[in-house]
Image (cartoon, rainbow, N blue to C red; front, side):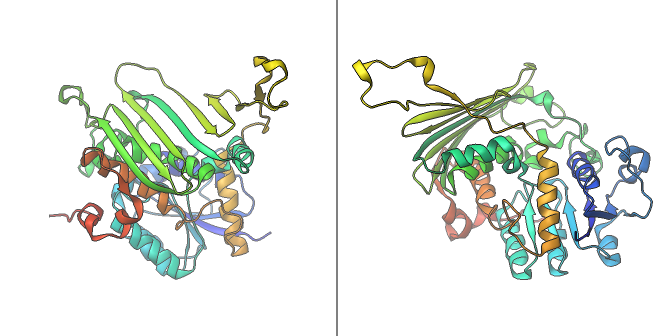
Length: 384
């Protein structure tokens, strides 16, 4: 077993979840933590989220520059708000350090493309935190669909604005929301489709392959319904066209004062449907008897087929295991996605934002990434 020395940058909600997963892996050796807020590095606070945690032998830093200068690690986990990247991934890649980046990696396509180019040219191991690819159900669904002609997918996510939990980043000190719920704020999160819908978007890619184009329309939040900087739209309708010819619909909401949330999938192939309704297991609906049916009759109770893919697993733990194994073996083979392969998911959700800005115009993702026509949309605003 090869032990991998790891530093974690960003000890907010997601960073703590990653640290908790890494703490459970014998092959992962946490050697350094970095966060700009001293309270997030306190041992007694971290112990509330990571059972058995101790700072013994672990260095802590308030700045990434100090962490990088000190060195002494094989890999870095980055879990910082996407609007706050300031070249840290580039510097780490240039130093030959393997990278795990929480998604979204950026809200700006040019910044993301520079990250990807630098990481690719460095030859390091890299992945992005699309842990849903490691869900036993989702892997089972991918295998089930592998020999089928996929036609259409619909993914509906109904959520409440209040379900955004308070984060650990002191956004009120750096021009962000006073209540620290940066995920409800458009400028900080990029929109709910970017901050949250990127999960569902990447999962649909896991099943159907790369996305070729996107079209989107959002329902903006009324001005008198914006509190504490929570100005993300009420509802989102996004359509994806896949390179395979399949179509997908992502429908999302973030409503105030509803306090109800649910979600469901419907996956259609040319001979049936597969449904996931909340936490109920996957069920495939199809006919597998003689065709045409004898006497033209079909027993409807025989059309539903429960798909037993085993119990759901800890996906954050499993993606950590895959990354640490990949770094130890110096091979991307254990990974279910790399930084480069994840570009398509990021382009799809950021392209949805741009489509909405352009009144639902279809956005070809390759054009979005590389054509001069979208140059202004890719740029990160210059601070003044």
